[in-house]
Length: 99
Image (cartoon, rainbow, N blue to C red):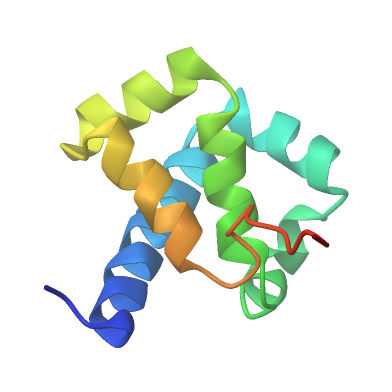
């Protein structure tokens, strides 16, 4: 079983690939920028912020055609993308519940 550090490193690798995928697509990039409110020249700086890479994966996962194309082009199974999201800071959607 992989330890948390290696899982996070693998998740970051997938997220960076996803960011490159989005940045290289002339239709996806403007949509990503509009949704996030980030300016194109600020992506590098934003990528250093906690939660940014999780946001990239959320963007990919939110649109099935985009998810399937990314998965095919990178050879990354969709379940691995969802798993990567949960391994990143601010990517886990588990919330504490009061009992």
